[in-house]
Image (cartoon, rainbow, N blue to C red; front, side, top):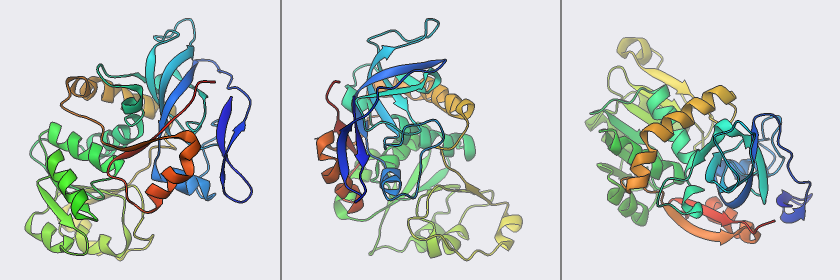
Length: 320
């Protein structure tokens, strides 16, 4: 089979690699499409290696059909599926633990299904399991027009919450408003700290961090939970730690990729039970910015690097 590798100069190259071999309890998937994530850019730069046991090439999620499954598996050859991966989605095939595989929701294509696992699993893990989202709570979602942001907005609204979100352009503001965001903060025009002071959030899903973290965290409602999943705004912040015990705040650091298999399996089981029916009915829908062939991965990476995407960027993969 072929996979998209990073050569010595940092360029993406479509090269032949050994076919995957399924281990105990694993399936092999013929990949039809994979979705980009900002973590791919970090991995390409050498700053985010895959967990042990996963391929060296990028790709945290994929959709396709089952090529091989254990005899006692729920899966059969030919089943349309999507999967959460530790790596290896930028290829024609991947082997993965069967617990990390989900059926394609009824009515969705494989291209649409490729946009689901990482974004919806990250949103569900951090909002529902880490932060304990309850109906009626207000949630700040940073970068609302990203693949994760668009999934998180829909998740919060489906579970009865209220959304404040940040975006970087008027087009992105229009998108998140159509998804149901109640308050949109346009960076460069609006003051996020002032917005939160007027509408204190119960939960924050933050991929920015940086110097703005401290002033924003001070505006949280009592008992607030701030979940930090990345630091696109920088790794350092100054915090008034008195806020934590005086108002019962929690700052939670979280990442999905390095979690144990059992934790990931529990997250995906929750997704299938709570969100897959809404995806099948059309109440939730992945937001896709652009679909490109995997041989145009350089162009796809540039879209993310420039932060132009509204939703997910998908790469289609030819059959082996």
